[in-house]
Structures are given as C-alpha cells and as structure tokens.
Image (cartoon, rainbow, N blue to C red):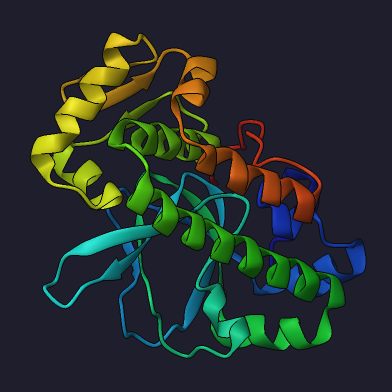
Length: 248
C-alpha cells in the first residue's frame, strides 16, 4: 500500500489531523479524479462513499418536486461531500455535482463513521465543517430572497474562485440560472452589469475574474458573512492553497 504524505494534502480537514490520527485514517483513503459534471451523490441514494475535496469544487443541490435543481452550497478543499453520514444520515438529502475537474480522497462511509467515533480531532473538525456548511446554506437562502442578482452572482463567483483557484470558469447561462435560482433570461443582465464595471469578462460561456477586489465590492454582505464565520471556527479564510502535485 502506498503511503500518503500528509504534507502534500490540501484538504483542510485532513491536513489538520495530528500524525497519530492521520496514520490511522490515511490507509482508508483513495485519490480519485473528479470530472466536470460528474454526480457523486443523487438525492435519496444511500451514501456509501464520501469525498474529501483536494482541488476543484462541488455544488450541493436540492432537487424540487418539478425536477429542477437549486444550489444550496459549495464544497471545496475546506470540506467533504457526503458528510451527512456522520450526523446520522444514511441517504443523501442533496445532490452533489462537480462544477470543475479536480481531485478528491474517497473513503467509504462506514470507515468515516468508524473514524468519527474513534478520532477526536477528526470528529471536531467534521462537526465544525457541518456547522459552517449549515451557515452557508442559511446565508444562501437569505441572499436569494433579499439581494440583487448582480450581488448574488458576485458572491457566488467569489466563493467559486476561493475553491477552484482559477480566475476563469466555464459557466453557461443555464448553469448560472440553476446555481442562483433565477430565470435564464435574467442571467445575462447581471453578468453584463459586472462586465461593464470591469470586474469580470463574460464571453463564449466563460467568466473570467478581472478584478477580485472590485468583485468583493460588488458582492452583498453574504460572502463576508460566511467567510467570517469560517475564520471564527477554523482560524483562517477558505484560502487558496498551493498548486497540488499531479495525480500519479
């Protein structure tokens, strides 16, 4: 079995583990590639695998009765997809879909639950992550109800940039509409407003962040609210990690 060097880990939960807990957990981890558009969990399916994200980011989506999905949160290297199992969940409430290509450490749900019961530092970080994810979901709901679309788009792009580490994102108007819970026809208006302000460039299904500070000014309070809570719980922002080594 190939040993994983903890110094190369970018997932913040795994990187924060003490050496003794890492030695017990790491043999259960398998590095896997995540593909753009790949669905890791579907609504109502039994969660048998969880994914500690290394690079890229994942959308957690709730699926409405008419079949339309709506994003409730983003998952990047600060967390993992499928964490509901440590809270007693057996099936997935949310659908998790990869918004970029990336890497993740996969682990069986049963192994994670066993580790949760026996590794105190891991348990503490998983519970704090569950809390910050709940904060993100609640703030997203408030944001969708009360803030202008341009502000919401800026907030979402900042969160995506924090997790993807790339300034250019491949996003169609249909996808943005799903992420923000709006009609497709209104998306181009919001993107055009931010483009005229000089903070992004939107063309050919790609959004490029040109001015990060300006984008932060254009966003609503919700971006800082979630980021500030992350700092309070973990002592740091969802910071952009260094470039990882290529997958063997």
